[in-house]
Length: 581
Ligand SMILES: C[S@@+](CC[C@H](N)C(=O)[O-])C[C@H]1O[C@@H](n2cnc3c(N)ncnc32)[C@H](O)[C@@H]1O
Image (cartoon, rainbow, N blue to C red; front, side):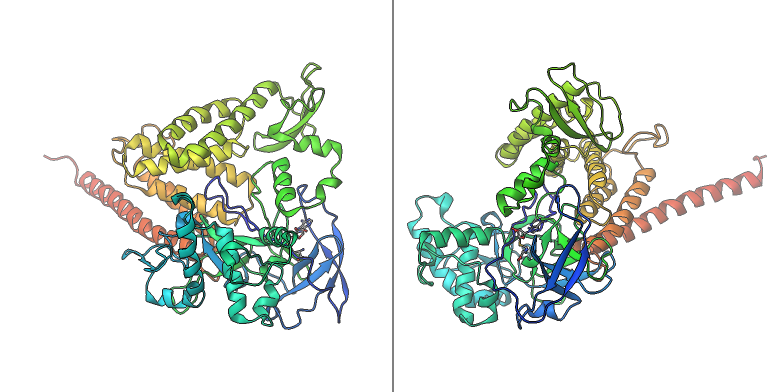
């Protein structure tokens, strides 16, 4: 669940969610009328009767906060705010019950605190040789559970048919940690009670409780899938998964008022990371439900619905009218043989979400149903969407295997999509732009030329512009993208223009105007990061880095300003002295 992580186009898929099998709340209950503001993606009613869910001594962190759990017939349990919470408030900060790194991150992040490798590197567990730690403190903290996991990892590796599968998947390792923690804490413990619905075992978990049937296993795994959060780095890069039953109460909205982030804001070594923060990105009123997005909200409606249906099994789709369904068919669109006669489509043109009808067999009557703008080049737009999606799928596969080829495709594809009329926020243009940006940034380290740097900045500008149209101010993904753009603009130019004032409309500019722009973007980024990563966290670790970059630039710009002032003063002094005799 949780998602936002647009760090890459493989956005973190927030896995999350479950619930149901918990006992029906008993005891005190009363009803309130909660107002929700959902967008079309939720297709849920504006008001919903809810009743308080007693926590019965569980979910300790939740009960001490200005939050409560309520239940409605339509959405089950959800988290509600008892007080006013301004955008940027940390609603809860909690260490997940269990977290594991993705296999690809095991040697670059600590398996205990989940922080990136320090300059001094990480130390590997000498027994399983699979997990790594910052130091002995982190290793000792993890040992009570890792000692059980360590044996299992060794056995698994011995029996693995190939090197590729010598480490079990994230989900298997996560379930293993849940079961071993349960064993350690005891079946009657709050840990076990809270997590009760997310267990699984088999093979790898041979020494854990017995599974009574194969159906049980399927059931548990499906519950587990819908309740797992993406573990992200402080810059929102997905690095693993975690389980946190307290936060698993949070329901979904495609227009969320809160996000889940791991800001890594504290420099205090006694603070046990990873700390999951639920942060409001909009002002939340008392009795309002706190909702996050389980999916990538930059995707078109139909793809969002598909993701929700597949992973979380929402029944919202049933409520779609045929018109909504067709409109939602976006991108997959007109070319779809299922609707040869009349295909309604929705694309974002000129920065707005336009819905229009494409009557394929009737003279392409195309007019936006919202703003009535005639769309003349529907066929080319639809072609661009299809070709763009194909390119996106291909580049996603090639990105790590053959980055040169991947970059070749993105370089050719972006101008094609743009000239077909797609705007930066339109899928798949936005996703391809993100991939192109990642590929460009990766290539900068080997060849920092002025042209390469400028192209990377233009791409970062386009990506950031696209996100700004789709995500609300303060969304952490927006903040990160703005910060990335600001930092790129602040990179020393390899060969700056000799006369920066010559072409003032060029983007990116050169010399002092470039630094000034870098400063403006960094300030904007900081304003958004302190919302998305929490005001009290100072925007988290990434907010502190941007703050430092702002201070450095202020000094640099000050030098420029003073330099110019000095030149002006010298010139004035020379002029006042009059011409030399
Ligand atoms: C992680 S749980 C959220 C808490 C859950 N409501 C509970 O009672 O524990 C995710 C599940 O909640 C329900 N849900 C969450 N958001 C929803 C939404 N916007 N519309 C419909 N159902 C939703 C779905 O059943 C989903 O699989």
